[in-house]
Amino acid sequence: MNEITIEAGKAERQYWKDLWRYRELFYFLAWRDILVRYKQTVIGIAWAVIRPLLTMLVLTFVFGRLAGMDSGEIPYPLVVFCGMLPWNFFATAFSESGNSLVSNAGMISKVYFPRLVVPVSSVITSFVDFLISAVLMGFIMIYYKFMPGGNIIFLPLFVILAFATAFGSGLWISALMVRYRDFRYIVPFVVQFGLYLSPVAFKSNVVPEEWRLLYSLNPMVGVIDGFRWSILGEPNVYLPGLAISVVGVFLLIVSGIWYFRKTEKTFADVI
Image (tube, rainbow, N blue to C red; front, side, top):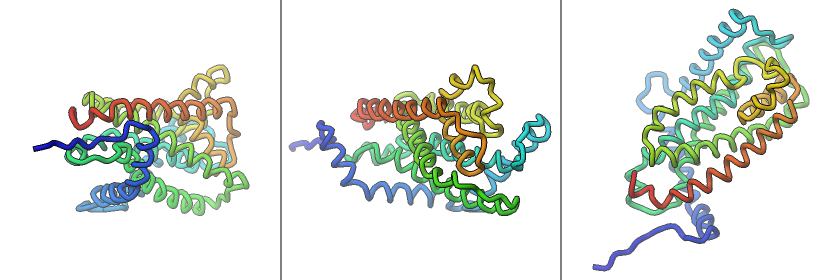
């Protein structure tokens, strides 16, 4: 009996054509993950509201009350929740992307499709939680009678930057998780450590000026600062740091695609 091996086209153009041909798989995997996440849960989709709300209360108490961080004229819960919006999206997408290929091992080992679809669908699924949290942010702003200014028109740009950061990081961690399963223990640590390393519960302008460029090597710094500036109007975006974040995210995506494509052909063998 003759054997037929189905594999991705070696030419990059053919691969990206395949990615477009399998675009409906994006929707299927994303919708399936959403259903699985909230299926047979007690509080269902309300968890996407309760989790960030409780986190906001804890961070507000610790940093606003105990540590005495100053938020100026803006209510401290708004400062915290505005930082949590992009961070929770990134953290969820990073974690979900890391497990995405391993979780779909059966499908990957049996049929061909561009494997890039899997981690990207995880990012899309995480974006749904982001949208729910964004609605909650709107209600909190109404509660505090806070109206965003004209900077809000730039918010979509920083949403795209947050999506790009999650996408680039997701490519790396998903490919690494297939080959090195120890990363499943590293990912929760990175997420937990990154929460305090990123300006989620405080404004980045509290960082000494001589350290701000180095601090901005964390791409989420520019993303979070951009969200706060767009929604709350302050603090002003640290432009050198934002430039570093944009360049860093670009390099993250380019290198992530390169490494993912390099290791993609071995996924079915080692998964």
